[in-house]
Image 1: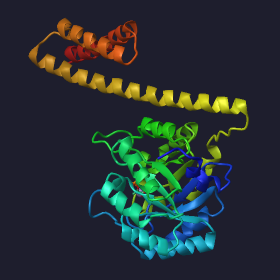
Image 2: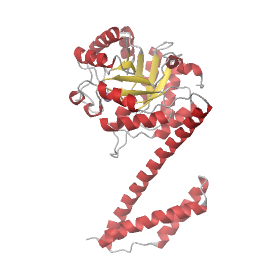
Image 3: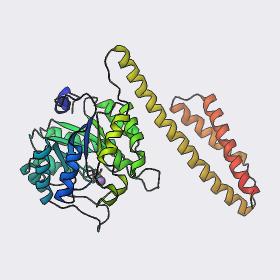
Length: 361
Ligand code: PEP
Ligand code: MN
């Protein structure tokens, strides 16, 4: 796939002076719910109304969507509000039904992007369409798999494309439902700057109180749009209740977000600087988290040493670590002096942690 301006024609054609906003409930539940939410979103920044019709649930037994019936409600929402509509399609039959109901934008879910067979089936079903297709990142942080899915659509002559960053699942519990791993999306953006990049803060956060910050980070990284799960009664939503916001909250979020616009040279410079600084902030945050994790492992070693009455400081092991890290540092363009100083500080903190454990009862 080449990086071509045509990839973003569909987005440019909206002529928006703010990022694209896609909003609506995780799932279509009832006709009234769909219409209520759509009407509340009608005069906001949201251009596109989203609702899941078929819901891929990780575990069976959760609400799996109302099915094709809900497409009629979306069609009605579109007629009544003039908003465009989008839903997730996960097989050729979904595509057929969505197209019959005049859905404007189709999105490929994270659990679908992982499967080249299904992605190909959907791409074949959409061959040559002028509908827009948005591809969510796969559940695992694999840039090739994500790009591969985009390429399958591009090769099937689907030229109105975009990607949605919804975070990556981890076995470990973190403060996010799905880890953002911003670097993966930023790499993709660097390779295909014209491919519209949209953030789905809802599925990254898993809770509504961190949605604003995620949106701001995305805008600072020059994302093109936001897809925010929005429900008139979030706490009683049939799926993903904790992460949905009300239409009123969405309006407030959009009002509070700092949206940077490139107007002249200086603005462009500031924009680029800001983007790089945000990348640094994201990485610094990861560094602190990783160091915290390292100290937790150190605590485990401390407890083990305590049970066997072994001394904290073991110079042989420490010298081995240092030698290895200096070599790895060299491969990563880090000077020996820097690696030495950094690891001395890390080692000291580690010793402090272990001594605290050994002294405790
Ligand atoms: C959704 O958007 O409601 C959804 C199921 O998303 P994902 O594929 O990102 O989990
Ligand atoms: Mn959802």
